[in-house]
Image 1: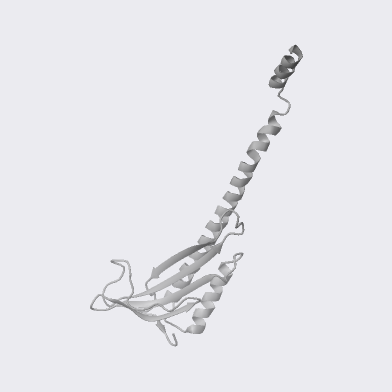
Image 2 (image 1 turned 45 degrees about the vertical axis):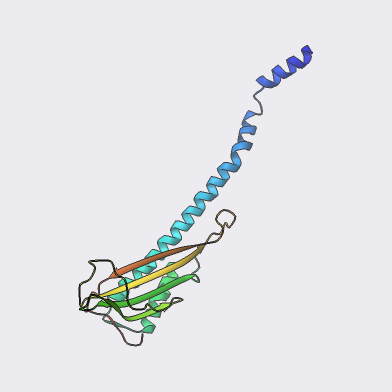
Length: 178
């Protein structure tokens, strides 16, 4: 009985494997946090790139006097390059020109998209952005982000962005074949 008591006492005071036990308990949690932060950074980077694409489409279109479908396809192709290293396949983009009429209703002058339907009348524009008779370029993008680590974030996260810019050179940007 005394031998058992001494053995248990020595076992309680022994600290040689304590670090290994603590590591074994904490390692899975630390690894989970690491992959979670890496995934969060990847998702944030995809969102920032998609936002940059939307801004660039609106900006390049607003700088033109007139555009056509070939010009807009070239602009969309630039957006595909900006999305790298992410796949541009799930990227949906659309650019439109809208004008607020004398009645205060915002109507679509033209609309052109890739993997996205054309914008339809009437359009909702934030209050105070344009007055009656004024025009606006509206660029929209949606990106279906799928996590490379599906075990942690299963499914698809839809990222979206809309930019509104006034035409810079003319009152209204025209599209010859949209």
